[in-house]
Image (tube, rainbow, N blue to C red):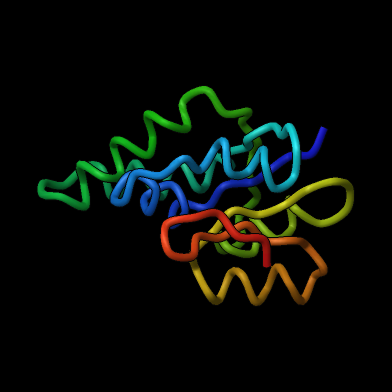
Length: 122
């Protein structure tokens, strides 16, 4: 089964602008297993500590990801860990971050992103 590794930017985007992202991914690539790296979770937890809309969005993103498969990270930058986890095998990366998308494309890892509120495959 294809694994989709989620970045915090994608999860926060689907909270900010609710969409049928899960169904859209299934329609685009078929069944998949969502994956959350520990370092992405830590990034969201750090944002969630504060007050305001961004913190509430991060808490909701963590709630969405609570049922995702978990993977450990090394000590590299979060984006580098995501690309490393996506290398080899049947993996895709879900992100709205342009820099991460470019890095994934350079490593020949397909990217799922959002365009006009819909899932798109880069």
